[in-house]
Image (cartoon, rainbow, N blue to C red; front, side, top):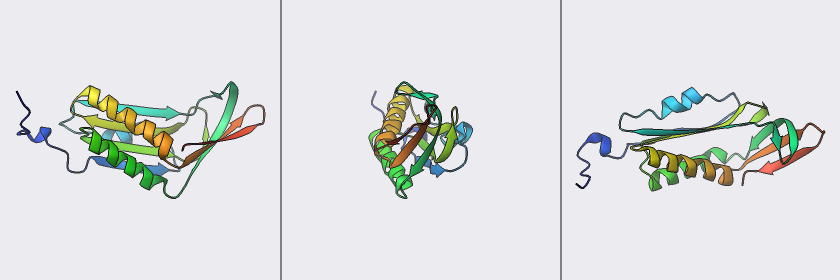
Amino acid sequence: MAQTNDHPGERTAQDPIKLIGIRETPLSVDEVFRAVGDDAAGGVALFVGTVRNHDGGADVDALGYSCHPSAEAEMRRIAEKVVADHPVRALAAVHRVGDLRVGDLAVVVAVACPHRAEAFDACRKLIDDLKHEVPIWKHQKFSDGTEEWVGAC
């Protein structure tokens, strides 16, 4: 039987981009999860990126993120593309800037879709494109006193 879109839950959400932001304060998984709540969504995929204690074989003590003034607009552009290419009911993405320590949340994204496979696909596309295209840079500080800048795009 073909989908008829007769049920309101089968129609496209009015504005599925619920939250986009660059934050200087700690991120909240709960805030992002609540932002994508949608009764017509059968699946929510959530990704949380944290500061790990190593990179490339070296111990990481801390890191700082900085961004270009266009970073939030680029996040929105990517979110709009994900919404256009996937059956997204709701989408949220926040990224941290400033000084972070090991274990801190660096990025939280979530996507709600009618079905789980769609939510996984859309969430992966969102985080992968954010990581590769948004002008956010990471300054890693290693235990041996060395430092490294890593560009997100």
